[in-house]
Amino acid sequence: MAMRLFSSSPPPPPLPGPATTKASSAAALFFLRLRRRRPAAAAGGGPERDGEGPFDRRMEEIAKKVPLFEPAMGEPAATAERPLPINLELWLHRAKVHTRKYEFAEAEKLLNKCMLYWPEDGRPYVALGKLYSKQSRFDKARAAYERGCQATQGENPYIWQCWAVLESKGGSIRRARELFDAATVADAKHIAAWHGWAILEIKQGNIKKARNLLAKGLKYCGGNEYIYQTLALLEARAERFEQARTLFQQATQCNPKSCASWLVSICFIVFCLLHKKKFQAVFCVEL
Image (cartoon, rainbow, N blue to C red; front, side, top):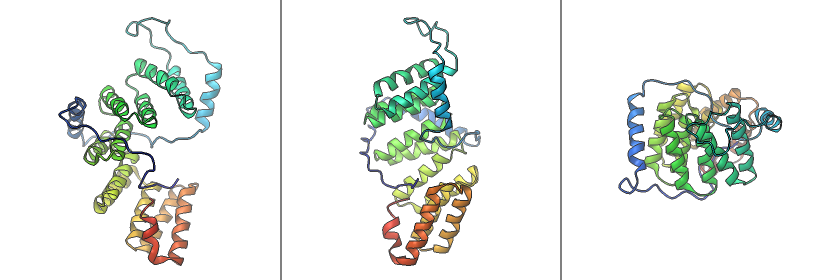
């Protein structure tokens, strides 16, 4: 899909000052801990993808056939036996389905159960934060992300990255930079953090900084179509069209099945042929 520099959704309010919240002190401890362990890079997977795929369809089939293994109602969580791991996947899937149907209360209940029994898993915190963001409950979204960082000991890059995106939309640029930095420290191979941080710097006009971040993303994560697309658009805005064309070709080579890469490449070629001088006026809005 095409990457946008500006979002049409209403931005969350800025984070309160350090004197009025207890969250900043707790998060600061995580930032300090992560900076101390910056040289270590943990192995990780690619960015989370939305949409329904084979995994979702398979989980839906399992959800219809397999009963949930839950402790008896009213049994204290401290003494209750943890349900089988399959329940974590089922609850996450059902929460995803409830969210798509705008059944937010049911989704929130399931995600809270996931966090109760599997506090070390970062996925429920990410899903809950996004759920609150859809409802414009931004304070609760921040609290969910901070709770997740504490539960995972600051080692889950997805939580840091989602929190950074939330602060970026709210205009807390300095805070967002710190959170993106924490995500890259938690996992240097987390490509979404490098790309999101670069987009933030582009919005602020720090093109040199953005190029540096994109280069680091390629260094640690290898070739990535979105990184190449963004670099190509930066080259095009600087009217270095030959370099832009080369980068667009690399983007399509990374993922030949990506419609977004081919579409942007075709738009670039056509626009350069017809309206070369007006390129920046159009493409400065979208990345």
